[in-house]
Image (cartoon, rainbow, N blue to C red; front, side, top):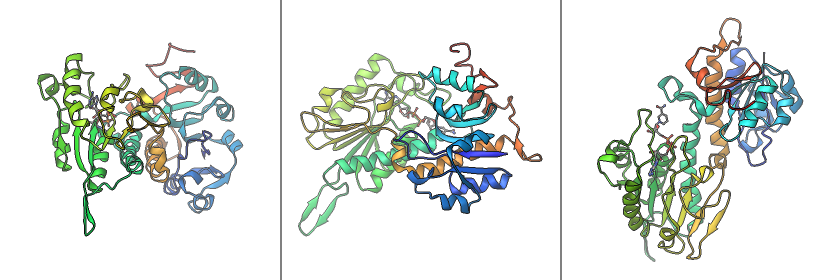
Length: 378
Ligand code: NAD
């Protein structure tokens, strides 16, 4: 059977659905792998490297022969036209708010898997694209902040004088926030962090940063069974905002990463708080694509406020470290695909009763099958 790796059509997407390592593994499973020419260029993987790993270099129209397509973004309608009915398509599908695209995938007859719906259970950790990409986004947020910040992060004591250490505050300490803390610490910043989940406090401290939050009863009960944050009460949010506002005024760099599953991102920093920061301070809003944590953040832009604070709202932040992001993403896709391969026939044999398949499968055999979308569109 054939697996196809397309070149991503979105100009802003430098990542790719396979690495030379994952190609080698796919070939090892018994597949013929076709990589569209130039697919890896944005991630510094040359055609020759894929070829050496055992792939054939092809063109976009080779998608029509594929039994599975491994990609980064949801296929466009034009791409879908080129796929054969029954092909498995693995990608980050971003289906909420894009129900028409889900319907298009059903009409195309592909079996589409939304990788971001992978359950966060031990067996699926190696397939967790949210974690692999959020980790790099957290790292890159610090690099982006440092780039916009016109001073050094570490304290430097030199014969010519002392450069003070930068103060970095991380708001929201999930996968991205933890990596942001670790990265800022490695660069020598003085780091503080906040979150509404109490379990985070120890993790923050173990990374050598200080934890700051209103630690009342609501806070102690704020974690859901799945390990995610709840939306906090208006009262809690107000008290937390007052506490953090005072702190933010003294920071050089603030990185926000707060998300709540199924809800818009919580607003953590109001414009009047941004206005209290020193000129030249930098805020990076990693939640900007989900509505933003920071008032005044603009998706895809670096905004400078009237008082000289830069608010960074880059899109696809993991894609800004594309080579590293693709390496991990490709491994995530491979790991999931491998669970769907019959080891004897060496062919795809999707077990529709498997919990990973149930959680991620959006469309199958011409229908929308995911419970969150079935019956709502078509
Ligand atoms: P996320 O991206 O959903 O949210 C980022 C962070 O924002 C979270 O820590 C959340 O608590 C925080 N937040 C939400 N509202 C906030 C507010 N008002 N103020 C401050 N912070 C706020 O989170 P994530 O990175 O996906 O991680 C969520 C949890 O899942 C973590 O406990 C993580 O360790 C866990 N996790 C488990 C697995 C696994 O078991 N396989 C894999 C990845 C993550």
